[in-house]
Image (cartoon, rainbow, N blue to C red; front, side, top):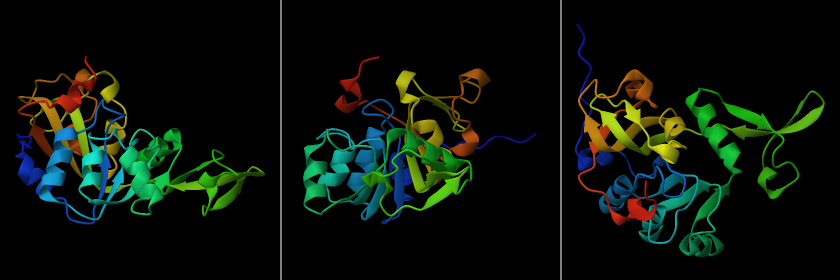
Length: 231
């Protein structure tokens, strides 16, 4: 009988596997689902030259902003930065490269990466700044943009519950970018508010199967950043 591996790992050891210069996906939509503790560990370890893929740049003093303040991010692939004055200032000063995507397109590019596709075709963004430098192809007599799939060296995600094998369950709207990012990275590290024994999650409670998760970190405490949204 095969025994499933225990993937629980110390925070420091899990994040240490991410090299400088890595492309890192961060789950979350604003606050819900954002792996704030793993982000703090990235900052503590000083991982530099990062390309960060996230729906937003968080607000100042939260999440991605800590990475920006520490000068660890070279490029941000995101849908908007308007809630973070630091991100806006760095972008305008040429200190941060930003690739903007419509939110649905960002989600679909990540999903395509997880599905093993090279990209997607869409008419969203045609004849706008979002189309600059992108390949245009013709489909059924209509032009479409080729949006390339996104994959990452690592994905950091936040779960409400996990088991030791890495099966994950998300709470409410935290089930946003996390499931698809868990499928689109070479190394997937999940922080979980609770880690249960194997079998602690019934099959219909599992949102991300453990086959996609490499390391599970149990949170010892929840910072104020998570408390911005009360469940």
